Image (cartoon, rainbow, N blue to C red; front, top):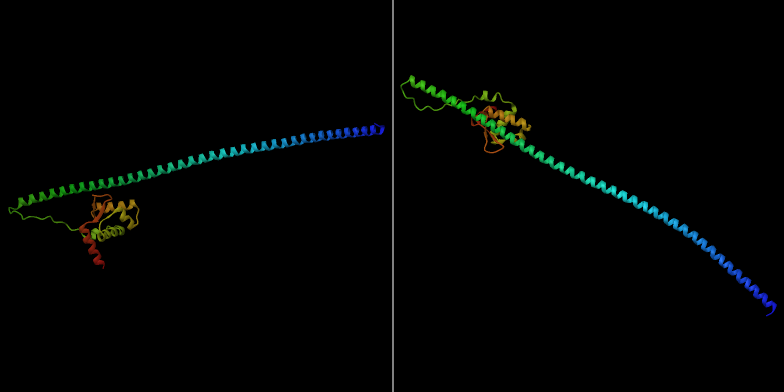
Length: 237
């Protein structure tokens, strides 16, 4: 081999070694850059995962609070429903108690009126018996059958004390027939208590009769009072 050949071989070897070394150096540099980029990407991924975890925890907290609020709302609604049912039951019981009390008071009033009527009838009967005994003692003639004389009610005295509302109620019952206190209330536009007191007064003063076989009671004008009202209407005409 000539000297020139040796030189060329040396140059080639030098160039090959230099290229290999440069190639190795570039590989090392690329690996360092890759490692650095990998670390940056890992940091980014870790940060993103932390943010996702925090967001999930916040969403879980919000969902728990919403569920708790929904449960409290359901409980409040149930309590409101229970209160409404209790109020409805109390109103029903109060209505039944009021009606029963009113019916009992009316029955007691009716019983008291009947007792007074019985006592008055007994007194009248005693007075008549005493009168008959006196007449028998004074006369030897057996009297003929004596019929009970009903003292007629004077129209002026019967109608004069009545208010316009009371007279309206009597005329209505006389023309339309028996009615209950609630029916009369709707027509005369008075309260239930006012109407009850009005009917009680007219009944106790002898203007009305009362049918007690059914509740609410029905009121009707006495036969004698109907005659007086008809006379009053004919005179006004």
